[in-house]
Amino acid sequence: MKVFIEKDFCTSCGVCYDTFTNVFIEGEEGISEIKPELKNKDLEDSLLKEAISAAEECPAGAIVVK
Image (cartoon, rainbow, N blue to C red; front, side):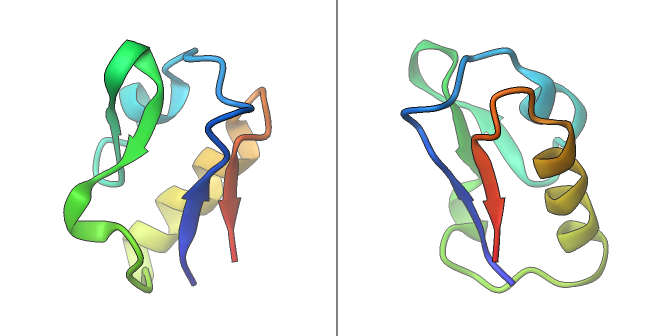
């Protein structure tokens, strides 16, 4: 499964990149980004669990895992 960020929905709250540091980083203007080495890659095991948890906790619904 892959993780995506709907940047138009991101509110820069920081929950993902402050809490799920193995998957996300803070990008320009506080907008969340997926770590470059993980972009467009299928996530497995602990990274996938982090991405799913981040999607569940994102208050803006900006994180999609599919």
